[in-house]
Image (cartoon, rainbow, N blue to C red; front, side, top):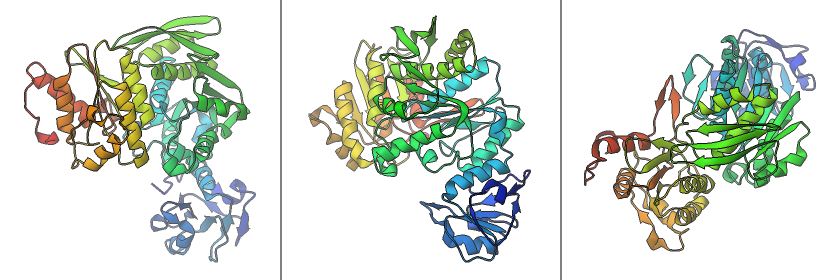
Length: 500
């Protein structure tokens, strides 16, 4: 989506961009904007973006031919309509989209969540805490967009600027008092949320990631730090004290900071009391208050995500008992250590883990609650750098008793090259099992699992919500079907149909 659909609020470009260099007119009033020249309509202002799709400055004449009445650019262009030259059209585009939508963020309390891992789960926990406090909440996250009435599938973690502005406008119109926005590093780098003032900013953790997109760890970190620059004067940050990467950001923050942690000193802390395959209980402590929290999701990472959501809730004046009720209400987040329970005598989890860091965290969480062996079906995503593949193998060899390398999806021809790349990370390649067909790999692992074992099915396609139904991955559907149909009498059968 490259065109603002909001036409309720007109915008004076001279007032919105007072420092821009203007050419051709003293004042321009517009009701819509567009960054794709092919979609421009009569009365639009065309925004020339420079991105992976190309240089929008080269398309200005086409936009004008289609009806654009002004151009927003980063350099002077010889055009016959008013032009505004700004330092960064991506920032200007976000600000313009928000203004055309009537600045809906001003009417809500805005919570931004970023980090390498845990953003989606923290978003769900945060929304649940607010809902437990009787707030009406809108959410944009990897698994879907919600305006508090309608839920839509997400085509990206952070919507592009006009889509995000439209979603926030719908949230405001539906009576939302709060909005939770998950912000990817790419979304922040592209300033998709420009023009949004945030009340709270959560940094879940900061690892080495997306270097193929950002070029260096420094660029990746700086992209994440952009969220804090958009905090209101009264805004605050929540930072994970246990995470070394996040600790590097702390000295740079010029806002109130609430730290959370399990191992390092922090203002909001947790101590795990007991863990089982299907749940864990930890003691949440904030100041002089402490209260037990029982969650159906396991692992230290989940405890950290709970602490982050709790910290925001506390600062926003929500009672600790209400916060706990919200945390405990999140029984699962699709494909985030998602437990499949069909009466089998071993544990099965599905996670979208496709990075070494995420895979290691999942296997560690499972090891803590497993008395038997840990089995792992895993793969490398085509969207991730090839250099990560050997690291996946290294993690699986160290953390799993049985590792099964397979294809990343059930709906594509298996690739032996990926398996070879992953095997390069093994010190003892003979320990690995390579089953190119994902269907066969999952079935083989299910058949090998013994009572007390735990199986992780990692990678694969991601999931989202659609309405009140959860759209499962192929992995979840296949494993659940196999457990129901063949779990009591495993044999050589291969499920056919959609997975054949």
